[in-house]
Amino acid sequence: MNLSVAEENYIKAIYKLQEGEQAVTTNALAYELETKPASVTDMAKKLKEKKLISYEKYQGITLSPEGRKTALQVVRRHRLWECFLVDKLSFSWEEVHELAEELEHVRSEKLISRLSDFLGNPVIDPHGDPIPDANGRMTKPRPQTSLDQANAKRLVVTAVSDQSSALLAFLNAKSIKLGTQLEIIAHYEFDNSIEIKVKNQPAITISEQVAKNIMVRPL
Amino acid sequence: MNLSVAEENYIKAIYKLQEGEQAVTTNALAYELETKPASVTDMAKKLKEKKLISYEKYQGITLSPEGRKTALQVVRRHRLWECFLVDKLSFSWEEVHELAEELEHVRSEKLISRLSDFLGNPVIDPHGDPIPDANGRMTKPRPQTSLDQANAKRLVVTAVSDQSSALLAFLNAKSIKLGTQLEIIAHYEFDNSIEIKVKNQPAITISEQVAKNIMVRPL
DNA sequence: ATTATTATTTAGACAAACTTAAATAATTTC
DNA sequence: GAAATTATTTAAGTTTGTCTAAATAATAAT
Image (cartoon, rainbow over all chains, first blue to last red; front, side, top):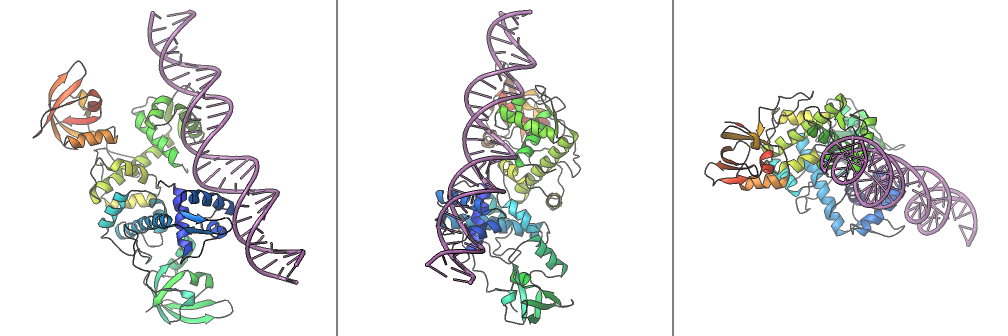
């Protein structure tokens, strides 16, 4: 099937939001793609026509098996390009998302399989997310929680789920990267903000919003 | 200036056809871009508006200084990606054109400068064409003529100017690559076909059309 | 269980880049 | 230099993906 860039982006966004199997709402998808709900409805009809999603009026959207396969291909391309940019072109992990967002739409099985070989067939990307193989299989994401729900005291940063550049810039300024070790100092009930400390850095307070987007696992 | 993919492709095609400084005709551009003359006229108005070309009704198109700068950036991106595909991902020189055609539209100065560094700042691409540097400067193409106009007997293939895959596949089948040494056996006046011989291969006859698109220099 | 609010869809319009068909200009030919 | 041919432009319409505004459905609140 030959998809436009826009269609691929919808499929990828649905995949990202679907998490488990609950249906994705029109509004959530519009927000994710920075577009309007009316546009989402239009596209939903088109993707249903192409059998990539199941969709009934007012009932939300779920990927069909074909849709999921497509999504995994796009995700694979995205994450391999991120590896390339970080490993070979020395970009830092917070710079690569936007570029990979464009590179991922160059559709060539051969290109991607050679790129993967060239990179040594990596299985996780620079953000710690697993890379699907050519058949769409990937290692299950390691046990990780968002920082706001972590119960252990000492943690390692494993991924950043919301890849907005504002957040990434903030983390950069605070020297928080993949693999950074954190210690939770306090958890303030009134606004769910969290005080954390990174070795050799002054303690900082992080809003619930930020904490939700930092993924960690116990050290 | 933020150009669409279509606009970049027009600029690149105008650059390619302009050769020297004669104006490019509407028809020639339509043929090159596999579109219709009417579409070219529409786009010409838009590009003139953006000051990338000079264009007057019925007078053809020439790049403005800005337009030339833009063209050189696109050419630079294209040729660097071709180097990457051949040198790093082991593609053969006739496979890379289409892929580079897509990769070239990822616009990021930083990406391209790092890619260039990663490749060792090459100055010619796998087809033998010079790569513009970040300022649009490049080594002038080496003295080369098309095979149909060569006067020497023994020649080296330096480039293939028409990058249609049909031609490239043909050359591949005949084991003719960049750097291949040829000997001209005969030149048939009646249809301007040329009989050539590659070492260890049987002699073959090549049409004028093909000969025009093989660039060579004397050995 | 109405009412109010929020979510979703429909209808109509727009921009970009393309198309075909018709009109006009430029060039060639005799 | 008038007629024929070819090149170019204009006009009107298409598709893709978007938008706004209005209508309708679903959900929440009283």
